[in-house]
Image (cartoon, rainbow, N blue to C red; front, side):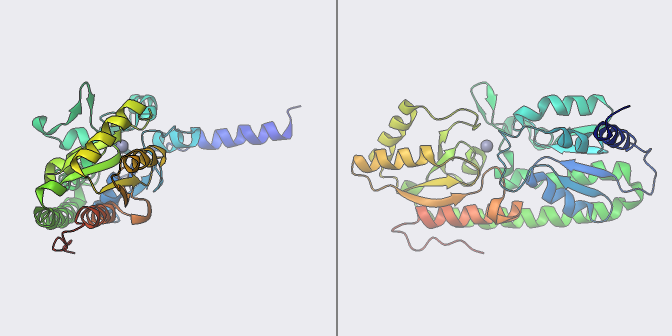
Length: 309
Ligand SMILES: [Zn+2]
């Protein structure tokens, strides 16, 4: 006779397998997003027409995320999966391929909204941090509305209206940020961050960006790279470097110590939210928080530059 515990496991397995009921026209489509930068917009656009789940928690590093069996189950049960792409979700790629092969529609959002000449790449590796430029990310609501309209044609008008509202909000924020950064003197326009997540942001607002770690956090910064950055900090008298909520503080602290040993009083400018909203809670919140933190730290000795809120 089978052990009772085994029977329990088997019946749980049977239950989980029977979850793929045929989609009825009335049932809300299940949308699973990887990052909050996609999930927040999907939730806003979907309203009550779809159920939206975000896989990565608010403090999770997407470069290091490894899916559990439960995560794969959530993905398999979706009608639509929205992920970033451009190798952001490195360890999730295989699972996403399997989910796609099982018949679930899987859409790489960043790859879809980027125009060909907008992609930033570091040698061979594409830079996945596209959401950091809200003038590009403001195209995501229309993409989501299009995907949901295919599944809920009767809601086309409402979906399109919500997407338009969302896009307008992001565009207004982007213009405010642009005006604020325009006040910053040229010499202050160096953004030194824990990992290289701010290239799209820097291009949009005309800041020179240097990451201590590369475009992914899967490998640590080398000592020679930190030494090279220390030289730049001292030479250009860069006032601040920033922590990131999802990245280890170790390499940032090494840079600060290196610069101070050479007499440059490099300050910690605050915590930025690059790959997850963290305490800023939402995609829009993280953008606003980053702009405020960066302007606050880089405006040292230049009191006129303030964030227009
Ligand atoms: Zn990143």
